[in-house]
Length: 466
Image (tube, rainbow, N blue to C red; front, side, top):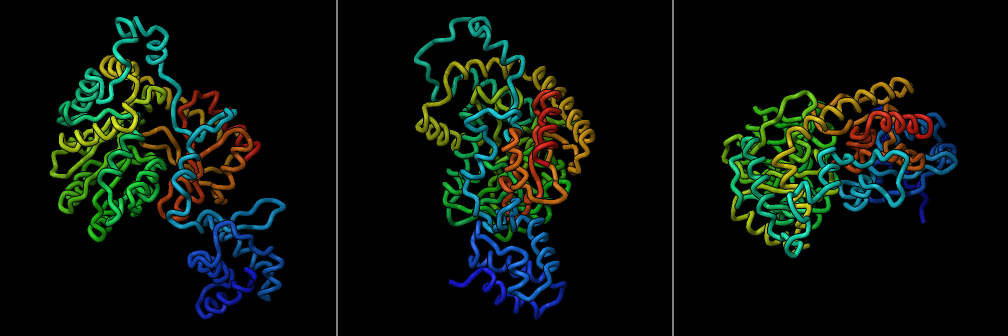
């Protein structure tokens, strides 16, 4: 079997016919082998000295090439171990949906500070409700058979009114109650996506959507993003070329915290309507505006576009309630409602009753409290980053509960591994990327936790992972 160095030698002959510094040509040679499948993810690479000797190059050339590959996420290097091909070599679908999703879940053991999951502790209204359920519900918590497979009527009405307050002309028959927003996304994608066409996703996106895309037999199409969010003009060009049945967007964008302005949103909606593309408007964190400006839901803009709106209780109240919903046309809603009931007979009727009252009577006060708490925690992040002299780069988000942090020296996967070992796990940007390398130098840092916990977690990361 030919060695990695021998394979590189052959490919380097090709690259040396071009232009550019030799270290760039060497880095491109390695990328070429990885993209062609000749070198697989996890392949052990030669040491810098061994590769330099085999290719008759200077050690500095190989060092510079390896550094370039590390910065782009193509190479992983651990102290005392041989370098290996990193996550970028796995391609668009290289990370399985399960490998992506596990990065944003709490593991079997409780860490010192869990930064990998963007789920908040319960709001005071939830704590009070669960402390005295009979008093909160006005009677016995245990009624009927405990099932509400097609959705508790009071909860359906509460969600309908909630959507109407946001400007969506919703009717009860258009609402589907789900076990969280994750299930709503899965139901919609697996119902509408097919193997014939891709599902359009923002080039970095919520990891929970990848399993649904795979289950549908489809594949992802990466919509371009800039520093301020979705590149709408570039996205429309791709949509017209690929004509996907479905496009999935997050508002505020998960994980960058950016937002699509109303004018751009209308342009996107009109283009989608012309193409027959259904838009999933995931508004799970859509009300968490940090600058006080609410965003208009797609379904409230009065266009001819087909829109499915997704929401839930987890980001404002508490994920432990396991209550989400989707809004669509009545025909599709009926199909999804019965499909959802066949999966698991619905969220517990008790929690649906609790959620109905929380949403109808405590939403505004809880949202105000949640956003104020998040802003305090965000200020604590700024203070801790400055205190520990960290060279992290990030922009304060327009909305949503997380920072999209850039590591100037790259290697987000390596950083995430060290963070997990230190007891303060974070989600590597690679879990969110549709295009390989898009998140190689990033990690997501939620700021839901109280200020003191945020400061403790950043202290742990600064001392043991940075």
